[in-house]
Image (tube, rainbow, N blue to C red):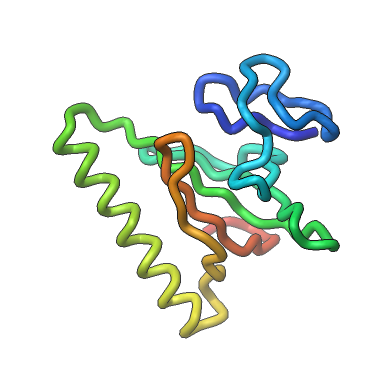
Length: 125
């Protein structure tokens, strides 16, 4: 099953579908990443278990979707800048140690920011 990434939908869809049956949103983020399930949710967004459909082994990865619960333009700008800073720090830290998941991508799609990271199976901290 493929999970819709539209924050107002999140409906499951058959793997062969390219668009969500409920809302019409593309089921491939950046024409590449397919969300499978929600891993977690907090005040700044959601994380999803996903697969990278551009690689033959369909490796698992994590999609972090930035969805701040902050009101007001200035608060949103600050939160967005902090998310971009997080991406920079994750990229640097991931290069320095194997204890931090590797950052694969950082981009904006449909006016939402995303991080794509290495999936590490195990217990959460």
